[in-house]
Each structure stands twice: as structure tokens, then as C-alpha cells.
Length: 286
Picture 1 (cartoon, rainbow, N blue to C red):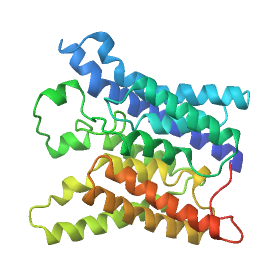
Picture 2 (picture 1 turned 180 degrees about the horizontal axis):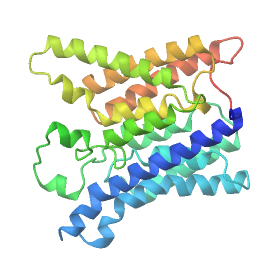
Picture 3 (picture 1 turned 90 degrees about the horizontal axis):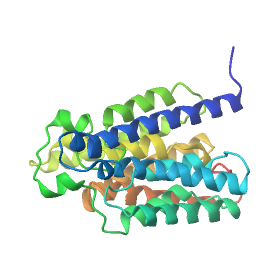
């Protein structure tokens, strides 16, 4: 029996919540619990990554209850933001920023994505550190397998590439998920990464491709239905633009905040196309 469009939408949200929760739990283990078990940090300090990851979920849920009197969409938007935050971000400050942005965008029904606005403020324009306490005080060398399994430096809940790819597989089972956008944007990033690796003999292509920020953006954020194009041709254009600007941000800014900056620029550029278009139906409405 085929699921209805509404059922597919609900199922995809459930998959998002499950995978984001798994990513958060891994971030908690990687940045907190493992060090606590080795007596390197206190128990309360070990909870910091867990609080950061789930803070957006809680704040978004509160916004939903205030404005909609039920869980609507902001709980998921908040979760998508908070799992990508740096470890050393101010928890109170991030909660205020996320809550304020989600509230204003939902209250005034703005169609521009609050995800990009919040990430732009919290990730790109602040000198927060992505390293945890132990990583900040010690020089650590990661093998390729370590990077793939999430032991490297990155957003507190998005470093595990294996879980990110599992998320793609689970999301791809729903026709409501725009997986073509993920494939295209990642493909463009990979192609340009290959070209720059060929031109620079010291460039490590495989390590460059294992960028959890890039993979997270292309799987979780760019195809997110509420703020991605609804027309097939426009989906292709948006994906190509996103992949290119993510590449530029990664290689010419830095590999941690650069992908977010590039994705933000790509989104606002495409949103400008939406604003200037006569029909204004390129980006899905809430």
C-alpha cells in the first residue's frame, strides 16, 4: 500500500529526528563521555556536547508550542542548527539566537530559511572553536578511518560520516526527499575538489572529500523540503550553485566554517532569483 504525501512527509521527519539523535549521541560520546570514562574531564563537562546538540530541538519545540500550540516544524529546524555548532559555542548565546530567529521567522511567516541565517550568525561570523577541551590542549593526528568514523574536529554532532551516509540511505527511501539535489551538489563539490587536487600535488583528495560539514549540508540542509526548490529544473540549478559555492568556501575560506558560508551564499543567491521571478514558486512555501 502506497503512503500518502502527508504520511511520507511525516515519515521523513521521523527519520530526520532519529538520525540527528544518533549523530548527537555520537557527538556526546566523542566529545564528552569518552574523556569522562578516561577521567580526563568531569561528568558535568562531559554533558556539554549533549546539551548543545539537543538545545535547538528543545528551543524549536518551545517556539512551536507558543505559536502553533503543537509540534510543527521549528523543533526540527532548531535541531538541524544546533547539531552543527562548534563545541566551544556559548550555549546560552546560541539558544537565544536560535530561539529569536525561529520565533521571528515563524511569527512573520518569512519564506527565507532560518537554518542558514542562524548558522551564518553562529558558525561563520564568530571565532568559536570546533575543538573540544582535550583536542585544544593536545596535538592529535587522525587516520582516514578515524575521520570517516567521526573522531576528527568538526560540528559537535556532525563529524560521523558513516552516520551521515546512513541518513542519506534512510531519507532516500522517501519520495518526499529530494535526493537528486544531494547527489548533484556533492558531485559538483567532488569534481572541483578533484581538479584542485590534480593542480596541487600536495593536496590529499580523499581527505578533502571526507569533510563532514560538506556532507552534512548536502544531505540534511540543501534538500530540506521547506526551503528548497519545488521545480525540477530549479532543483538542478540550486544544487549546482550550492556545490560550487560550498567548494569555494571550503578551499578558499577554511574547511570547517567555509562550507557553511558557501552554502549560505548559494542559498541567498538562489533566493534572490526567487524574489526576482514573476511566479515566485521556485522555493517551497511553508
